[in-house]
Image (cartoon, rainbow, N blue to C red; front, side, top):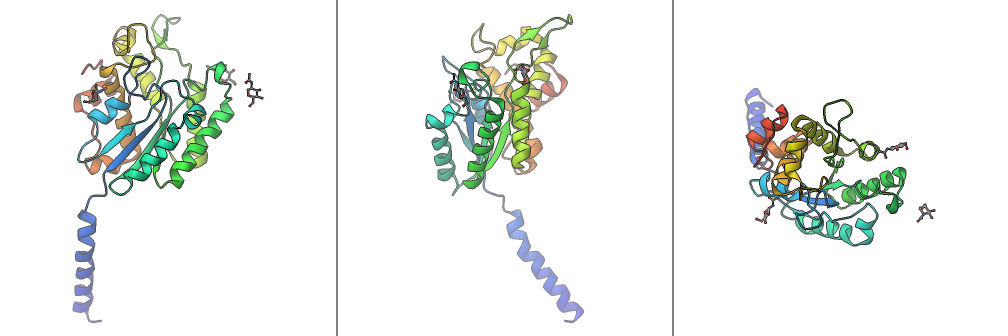
Length: 259
Ligand SMILES: *[C@@H]1O[C@H](CO)[C@@H](O)[C@H](O)[C@H]1NC(C)=O
Ligand SMILES: *[C@@H]1O[C@H](CO)[C@@H](O)[C@H](O)[C@H]1NC(C)=O
Ligand SMILES: *[C@@H]1O[C@H](CO)[C@@H](O)[C@H](O)[C@H]1NC(C)=O
């Protein structure tokens, strides 16, 4: 080829490459699998899921909250919720790029559930494998902190009673080589920063230190979105996932936020 031909050929390949580069990928569809700390606000539960779906998805991104009150990694499967997750992934695939967030631990850890930590880890790995087989992207989520404080040091600090489940969730992500977001750490840090009086305003009802009301769902749903952006940055670049600027700033600076 002459120099001009080489130049023309390379220009042509550039031109051909442009339309596909400029085209945004399909919007994400988030299927949320988990217990009551993910689930929709109701008399028996309420988590971050609806705040996340309602306030952080844009540009055609969508999702569905399949969090189930009282669920463990075992009951979520035996009760039919997991089948619903996989069916939802399948239905969403034509129009969307499906993601499945997986967050358990609050009920798995209860003695009555009789689920060992190693079984919990194995169960999470099994769920991850099935998400991958279904052609979706799994994101493991460490369990949202409860809002119980201890004051032995003089300064109220969150009681970290989900540390084992947090470590096990991270271990499952590493063994399956998939993404994990550390919601337990992010929520613990924020709750320590704002202190109990502010933290309790997110309670589903005054004496429920586990479940979130609507404003709490928006705060912790925003924290989840911010953590997801850190591991899936394209979702922010393409305008699909966005966290309210004030919320993001307040969380980063440990300042109390109320929507
Ligand atoms: C708890 O689980 C173990 C292992 O699966 C089983 O052997 C045991 O019988 C269970 N205990 C109860 C009280 O269900
Ligand atoms: C975490 O696991 C260790 C070792 O199995 C156990 O001694 C400890 O009680 C567990 N912590 C909690 C908060 O369950
Ligand atoms: C989410 O949106 C639905 C529908 O508008 C609303 O009923 C619900 O209260 C909202 N929940 C949160 C936590 O924002």
